[in-house]
Image 1 (tube, rainbow, N blue to C red):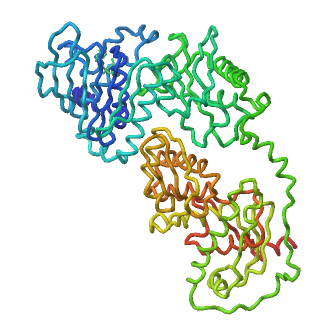
Image 2 (image 1 turned 90 degrees about the vertical axis):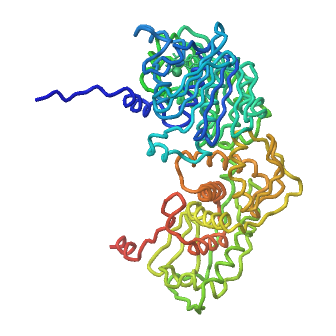
Length: 616
Ligand code: ADP
Ligand code: MG
């Protein structure tokens, strides 16, 4: 039999390698910026267009390359950074595989201009799909400029796989953060579609964090510092009261390299135990320095997963160091006498327990009595009525301490139309009475048995459809604020607000100026609790960012989901009988009453047969 194994041509091998190294524009950004750092740059410019789909350019003032090196740099496994396997155990550079440039050049149009300090003129190279298409001498500043255009031009499947410009921009921004946070001494500029979105002067760690995430960060950081034989820990954690709904600002760096480590993350969370609510995440910027020979970063091509020799010790050190810092800086509640009362949520449950749930008993209620109800021809009357009803439903929400958020609900007297809601449904034509079970379920009777509604999920469904309607039909009613609210956002959050601004306007938000870190809110949707606007917007932004990375569908849908999740009544909320009734009515006025927007069952019916069985 003839030999059948062949060596792949280089450009094919490069394309395959590229699949591992370059997943999206952000991967290119990472590789180019890391090369610039390895080249000893003191100023790095990142220029992108259309989320990197049209252009990614990195300009540095580092060492530059000779003509030969410039050509060689695009060969696979060409690297100046290691020369033997032994070097792998003592890495001081970001790159070492010599794969990045070769991979990028295999799947894009690359233009490089570079000059070393010793040369008067530089080299200008153009490469398309691994082929050098031109090489010229060029007058260029010392350093290197590489621009990457038409990424994935020869792999249509990958190109089509790219997400929206905003999503790609967000990934790029993440990479930019990761690099910028670990090199505060290097000056960074980041231009997107011609406008500068980051201008980071050379500074110290703390100021860099503040420059990246906005001035409000300054008051939130608690320094962390510890030096042991195994590891040197430095950096910051955010005060517990600023823990967020999203995992946004969590950064580990090991030997100046951004890493992901679920295990060490757990150590941080453990240090915050008891200080933050279980569904919130602490912010942190932690820099670990370990002996390079005790860390293996070679286990993944994109190099964010690492292996430490002694993870258990690291865990223990990290946890106690952070605990210590939190205590020392008076942020643990026991030590801090005038802290933000929001922190006390777990304790305030004591007071909550004292509220006696209102039980309304309808003495005339007889579940076996069928009350005849007149039917009317159309159900539309109800929908209108319920829409109005929701404005009432939210009165009183402004006072967040108000256990019975719905106490001020004004219910319309049960009109004849209401009866029509359930015709053709399994729901009983006349809803005689409802009650609340364990502050979690609303129970009522229906023809075939007992209706049990999950109050939180049902309300989520109702609000979801309401918001979705408003966003698409643009019919949200706005309530003007007497005193405009000033909210501070960092650049990334601001970008999200801009992205979703139209939808927010549709549901009734009015913004005044979105250009700098402070955003003025002059109007909010009708039923919004004024005191909670800041919190809800923060969560909205956080959840929205997460929703996108989850790959959820449309912007309107994500927003409606987030709003419904954040504004729906919760398990534990007491509902008076009118609110209960309204919940039932509005749920069954929904298009899809069965499921919450998060695909959870909203209600169930326990049939008479089921109940009968229990008595057998
Ligand atoms: P690696 O970074 O793993 O060595 P790359 O493919 O990213 O591999 O780069 C190959 C080589 O090209 C590097 O080792 C370096 O010598 C050179 N190089 C790449 N980018 C730059 C730059 N911006 N300035 C100077 N030299 C560079
Ligand atoms: Mg590299």
